[in-house]
Every structure is written in C-alpha cells, then in structure tokens.
Length: 477
Image (cartoon, rainbow, N blue to C red; front, top):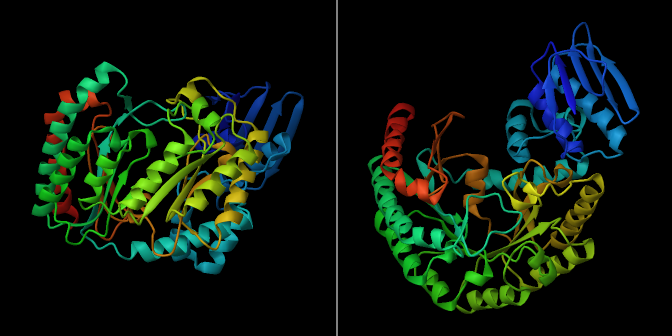
C-alpha cells in the first residue's frame, strides 16, 4: 500500500498506525502526489487525509491545531476503523510502554487531565486506561526502591533445546552439533565478562538490586555449567542488597531435579517455568518438544524443592489454539497456584518462523485474542493483580503483554527494565547494557554482538566497549 506524505514529518507515526489495521501490508512511503489507491496525508492550510482501497474511499479534513500529528493520527484511526470495522482499544497509542507514558503524563498534567488526554487525544478505551492506571500505581511503588546508583544485572544464555516457531529472540537450538559445540567456549567467556562487569560495578559504587538470567533457555546448560555460572555471579557481585534473583527455566524439557537443586542451593529466589499452552496439540504446532504433563511435573518438582516464587507464561493467539483452549490453559495454570502468571499476546516478528511464513494477522484473529485477554482479567482479578505491561509491534489487535502477580511477589527486574528507571548491566550474546543517568531521562546503550559465534570471536572488542560504563558514570554522576 502506498502512503503519501506531503509537507509533514509524521510518516513513521502514520505508518505505525496503518500497521495496527493492516499488519500484513507492505507499505511504500512516497512524497509524490498520486491519484491511485492508498493513504494520502497532507499538512497545508488544513490537515487532509484521503484513503482509497478496494472501492472504499474516505476524505477527511481538519483545521490546523497545536498538535497536527495527533490530529492526523485520529483521522487515520477513524478512517481505518471504518474500513476494517475494527477499532483497537489502545486507540492511536502505538508505544511499547503505556504505563510509563501515563506516569510521565501525570507528572506533567496531573491525574484528571491525564485521564482526559488518554480518552480524548489518544482514543484509549476506559478498559485499557484503567489497566494502565493499575499497572502504573503498582510500578511506582517498585520504582521508588531504585536509588541513583542502583542497577540490575541481566545475563543472556542464547541457547534452547529447539526453536519455537513464534520466537524472535537470538537463540540457537542445541540440537545442531554446530551450536552445541559453541556452548563451552561461550560459557568460559561469559564468566570472564561477568568478572569484568562485577569489577566495573564495584569501582563505580553501584548497588545491585536484581539479577535476571534469561535467553534463550538458561536451563539448556548442564547442571555443572549452571553451578559455575551462579558461582561467578556470587563471587563477582555484591548481593547484600539484591532483592531478587530470577532464572528462566522456561522450557520444561530442560528442567531436571539436579538442575533445580543447583539453583535452589544458590542465591536464586524466583523461577519461570513456562507452558505457553497446556494443549499438547498446540505445543506440537509451535515446535515445543514437551508435553503439558512435563510442565506440571517440572512445576511440582520446583515446589517440592522449596521454590516459593514461580512465574508461568502463557501466549494468547498461538496457531491452532482456540478461545476454549486458551481458557483451559489459563485455568490449569491457576490451579497450579504460581505466584506470577504472565500472559503474552502473540506477535509475528519477521525473524520468527511464523513471521517468515507470513501467518496472517486479521481483525477476526484480533477479536479472538481480545476475548482471551478479557477472560484473563475475569479469571485473575482478585487473586492476582497486574504489575507490569508492555506491547510489541505486529501483535494481534495491538494488544498488550501483562504480568500478573500475587501480593508482594512482583518481579522487580521486569519493572526496573521496562520502566528504564535505573541502569541494567548486561552480559552475554545479544545482551544490551542500558546506562541511566542520574536525575534525567538520558539512556545510553552498549550492545553486545547478537550471535554466540560473534560473541566469541569479538569478545575483546566487547570488553573495550564496557569501558564506556565508567566514563558514563564519571560524566552523569
């Protein structure tokens, strides 16, 4: 579809809006006027938006105002809503962090005017605004725990037993001999990076609040490799102020009692054991080589060893799943009584196998996923409350991912990371260090190489990049 942009700089924002309604369309941006089909946008003596496609045609104009970009966005939303008979509940809001926007807007406008802004300017429904409000209120209590020199530590293990079809993360399947051969050298260098990073944190007087080992699937590593990794963290970082230590044991087919015992005997306080669905048929479709029963067994083993803070992830909108199937999965998760349940909306990323196959995101599918989330709110409200939220591009209906938790079991790292309220020092392939300046919104990023073989071959260069951490703290603190 052609997007014509005349006399304004909002092409990126308008393109993102169009993708809410037509996520599978290839969009060509042009600055030349044409009478053909597509979306025409212009700022002249007034704001003009014209859309033509498949015999549908709509022409809107509006006077210039204080925020022409927002006005044009509302016009595009109105036109495409009429064209598709679908009105996304987050309105024209396309950002990743709605609750962060709400907190920032409230500081600027106050509570009452913020509500008006979300309803009238952003066209957000009351349902979603109330959700953002609940999350923001919870997040602010956690954010207050972060001090100027607080930081979190993220450790990346970019290996999995197999690659799930919906996954867009940098992750290598250790079923291949080539990837499996990289693991020992990767682990050796990761321990060296943790030693260097711990020294930098200490020299700059940083205080560690939370640790998160993710991936990939960290429990793809052997029990001995996990033990060495955890030993490195405890030896190189001061954990005396650390409030939380999470390990993603996301794939039940990687979990053994031996590995869980290693985790339990260390500083680990929180686990993620992720079914994604309790339908064996859907698990097979998405390439997860385990059964629902294996998930239950892994969960019960973790409980028997004394883990008292466990998260379980589910995904709404998986291929082959139905509304009834999702309800059954959520009911099963609740029956296990984990402390956290995180419900993601399926997002079709280009780098995932589903994205490559161009599985269509339709308004009908969006409505089904919306019904799944509505059931989530009905089922979890009361026993759990929403504590963090983010959104991804190309998700069905532009809907959200929500972390739900029992009282006082929030994952602190998720909030610290999502709200960007303090530094995150990261180690491993694909990891991104985020440096947060004192008393300002400035964020600076240091990127590690994505793939394990790049991480290994470029390790010395990455360690040179880490010198920027000290330079940053000398400048902004």
